[in-house]
Amino acid sequence: MKLTKYLCALTLACSTASFAEEQELKLGIGGAIIVQDEGYKGVGSETEFVPAIAVEYGDFRLLGPYASYTFYRSENFEIAATGMLRLDGYEQADDELFTGMEDRDMSFDFGFEAEIDSDFGEFGVKFTHDVTNTHEGYEASLSYGIPMRVKQGRIMPYVSANFASEDLANYYYGVRRSEATTSRSFYEVDSATNMEIGISSDWFFGENHMIKADASYTAFDSTIKDSPLVDKSGTFQFLLGYVYVF
Image (cartoon, rainbow, N blue to C red; front, side):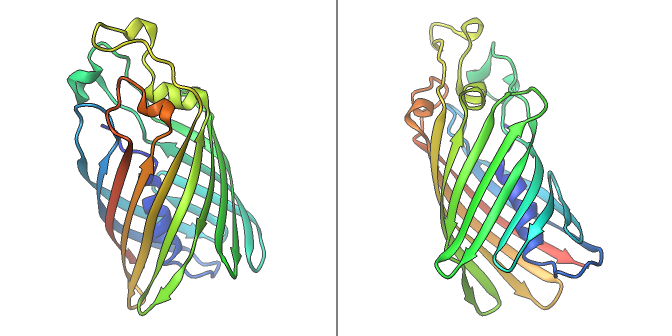
């Protein structure tokens, strides 16, 4: 099973918090263990090791499968253009559940994101759209987090509402007429709003070492929960990573 967008969050989170704001070139390398359950029937949780490679120069960041360019920045507000590989999907070989179904592939999604830092916490807005004609849909997210500084690190609990268009949600959780069987009925997924709650943490040791630990749970919209491919009410993710910054 291919991992989801949380792989993109890995390199972004591990690198952004570690790098200073100078215009010099910054490099980081490391890895992380990700435990994840995507909610499909017959498919349990997966544990994967993921390398984390990051490059940053000025306002440009290339962070594993995620790239961004910040074109506006003020004291407490910034806007960036983003591009990322959406690593969702599955192959027939992943489980008997998918026998006779076409593979659901990764896509490249492009869009924009904005972040507002306030006395009440951090607010985020993000919009991305498939530019590879894979799922041909889009996703929009609203998030809110409360960053808390602690000795040698930062902890941030957060909540997020993630709206997936009908094309996107149906591509990964729907069953086409040509794929329907007596045990797997035809099903079309509507647009879906999935709610996410989690906690993100970064821990620093000296100038070069960082450990990241994140945990989150995403509750499925009812239109996804009713899919014949799904038997869970949501997904969970856990990430533990290390990055060395040169």
